[in-house]
Length: 277
Image 1 (tube, rainbow, N blue to C red):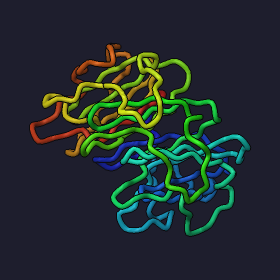
Image 2 (image 1 turned 135 degrees about the vertical axis):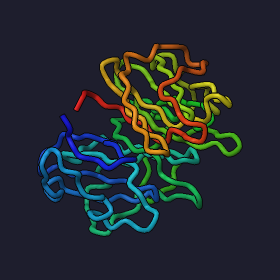
Image 3 (image 1 turned 60 degrees about the vertical axis):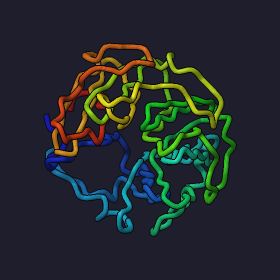
């Protein structure tokens, strides 16, 4: 059954289960945070299309929401962990974001040309993985990043080379695999345990071989074999694949075809689907 009607070239990025009084923390590409109560969202039927988020939040021109976190209460000891395209990471206590302001606030100060690409909640004992467009990944203990105030810029998370950029932040939880997808429709599934824990601010190790065949890395997600993934291309093609159909291979490999793209077509996004909708 369809959970929401969507336009072509659009797909469901996050599906959340929340109470009406829960708060949704909406983080933007410009490092700002906006609050929204679940009851403030316009209620609609299961098959309705929904409303553009720009109509619900005071976003500026060219600002887009890159991460959303549902929060029931602002627990002591919980942190908001953020990563930027330039490889900067920052950890701020969740309680720092407990006073909503209608115009939003700065969640992280960004340098010129940088943008916020990922946000997750951590409890102080997690590990963090940063994946780059050039096929590198660094995995380090969250404890290697001290807790900082809201307006701090952060510290180096991965040492990027040349024009490389971070495309995905993953806080691995439990067992499972990492599924990595490249621009030309190739991808692979590798066990989380295959990724070694290293120091923060290192160059990292290979997550997938980047080649002329593969293109650059679009993103990575943690998956279980019962999951599905959805991929979308810049031509609007949407493909849904069962994770179980992607064979598990080692870290230093090229992967297999997940979606066949036309000559001038590229994959631009992917998302894990926890169960069929």
